[in-house]
Length: 514
DNA sequence: ACAAAGACTTAGCACTTCGTGT
DNA sequence: ACACGAAGTGCTAAGTCTTTGT
Image (cartoon, rainbow, N blue to C red; front, side):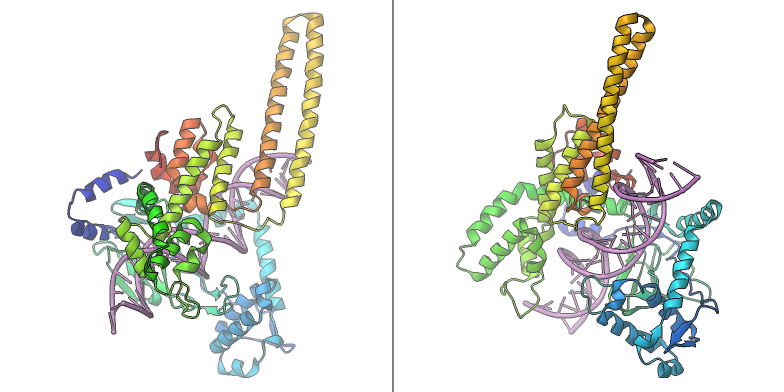
């Protein structure tokens, strides 16, 4: 794995701050890749799958038909019942129609996509029902694409790319009540794409008959390709996977900043408490804002983006002035560092409080999950209770009942074996007793595991652990905990997580303190 | 000094795959 | 071997912070 420690020592040794800053701006020396993998071209519908307008079958032009399929595919989603969605879709759709089509298709209500919808549902099911070998073949094809487009060379190392495919065309699905829901997300063409790679590398070849918007060599940024999306007119990037050295070092750096905050947070807290009483309104507002950032996580957003002049609660405070104040308190400090710091320090404290070294691995894992949950609650990472919760809980309970029965049975059998041994006193019956004992132990252990599972599940039903685990908890705390208490790392991090946190697994020993 | 653009991180949903019990 | 729920993964919107431009 990478050696971030060495990297830091190097850049520190440069002395002058200015110099280090320019040094840090360079993200790579060599970058070579194949460019993005483009979404497959539209395949026209078979002739027997028809679109109907006002009850009459109507053959659509290719472009119009493609957009119709986007809508048809979503037919059983509640999005398509929303007026905003429908209006946005219809406006954008009409724009892509031929003049003739525009004349005919006047109202979305008269459009019948049902046949098209069914075609895709059937197609999906057919794909699922494919024989093993066929599925295997498809898998091999995706693997091949991943192999060819999914990696790049960065400073001599082969690194995995996070998102190497362009986003396919479709209908925009914003979250919540988004005013742009249903708008047409256009197909990304090579002519939209800016390629970033090193000068001396093999420049990616655009698909035949096309050319790139631009090929540039900017080693102060980490992206490999970018384009502007048409909905919000913002940039989209192709970047590296979290397992890459580049991302890993950045992640590590983030936690190092949070650890430095640990050293000064006491001072900062007493300062902002004093500043509440300041005569200067600006200072007061800043102090209150800081308190909210530090203590009331979920309001961070609310107070950071007070851009609406209508209800300007912190009218003397801008994000710029707050952040430069934070920067003065500690180099690298910004609002979100408080979140990282509070989450990580809480995990460390909770692990200390909840772990019993005498416990078995299952019980230790319960303690770990409880510590993780304390953090998720703190960060307000809540979720709706899963729809299947009750059902799966009952299934688990049934398992426990069955296991209890097994325990009783095993106990009875052991008793019988003991009696038998008492009577016979031979080697064979003695062995039988041992065997039954072992069996009982095993079943009891399984029962214990199930009981722990129930507790864990119940406590977890309204809390999402993923986000904090992936983004806010210094992985070295978890790695150290695993090493200290003999818990295999696989029990708390799955494969992807282990790849992302490879730097921490490599670096932290059992004595690590956040 | 401020706003807009650019870069990068975080978040949650939906689909796929995996693991377990039957 | 099969079905089911849980876990894992892919995707992309949305958020934060930095940089750039006026």
